[in-house]
Length: 138
Ligand code: NI
Image (cartoon, rainbow, N blue to C red; front, side, top):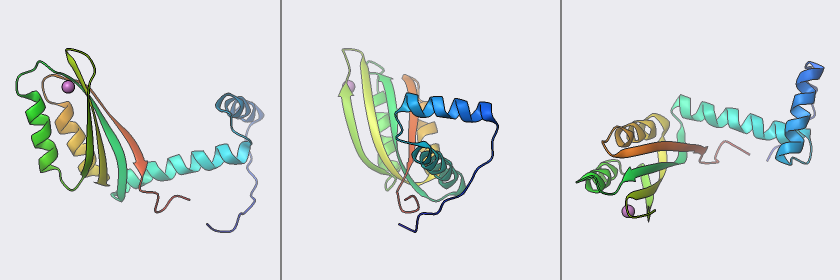
């Protein structure tokens, strides 16, 4: 971790008041910590856009009764190695499966994998929790 640097920011008083309310609602200790988090979010978003190695979790909710769907989802993941690191399958109830796919790799490749899974008939919802490998984020 580098040296801590102080800098000043100019912004409208209404915007600062809204930010302070957000800090209280989210439970931040101070403005600096909230600003650090905001900067990290922007940097991670940039990593995904720029083709850096990133990490995340693809969440899938799908119909357990759709013939062949589970096998198709598994096959797509086999084809997506090395991006797919690990998969957890949860039988939510008699009809619904929830799957968490931990991924690491180039952002566009992960997005493409998520798109492929989302477009399958019987997949009810897909979402990516996009994060970083942590290499560039302190
Ligand atoms: Ni299941």
